[in-house]
Length: 114
Image (tube, rainbow, N blue to C red; front, side, top):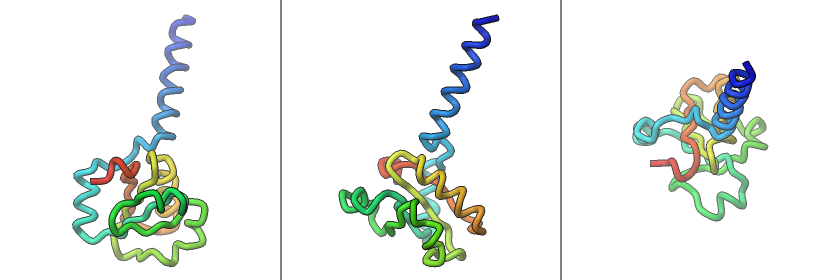
């Protein structure tokens, strides 16, 4: 019985870690399709991280100021979000969908970008 409890606890812990790492990210092939279709690419990392290197054509809107800057993002185009690991971009994608953006994807981290 104890074995089942510990196994369930470990599985739950793995689930939480994967959620925080942005596992619900879009496969890079689909991210590329969105970019090729003219998506707005948003880097939700800090300005310091953005200055250290960013995806070509990306706009820096840190996740901490995303809510105040949603008006800068066109709702008529797909939106591709990324950060360092996929956790912040996952959070940003949820917030944007709740704000009425229909075509928003979490690309994961900068290293996951096509």
